[in-house]
Length: 134
Image (cartoon, rainbow, N blue to C red; front, side, top):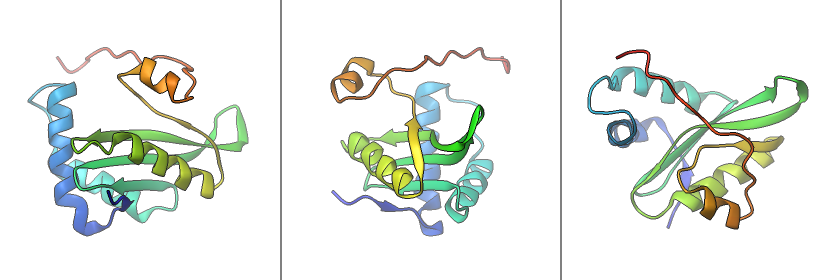
């Protein structure tokens, strides 16, 4: 399995995976492919962006200082989707890239918290959402 940094040529495939992820998590309506492509293109071009792809997966993160300790860099996952079994490998690759760029920690979402805990990841907080657009 090959995991590599995404390029502009990957944008159409990333947008399609994003559409499928959005459909599964949020619902069928509201996905904006043009805005998605523009956002991911900025992440690819930015020194603070990390976007990696596999044959059937993707992960993206933003490097940013921690709000209460600005000297402590963190990587915040913004999207993570895989249909080819590469999800954990994408996460580990993103963590390695973040570490190489000076991040002290990564924060990400996961649906299988027990599995992630067994892999050595520590739950820090839960994400809740309220749909304001319905």
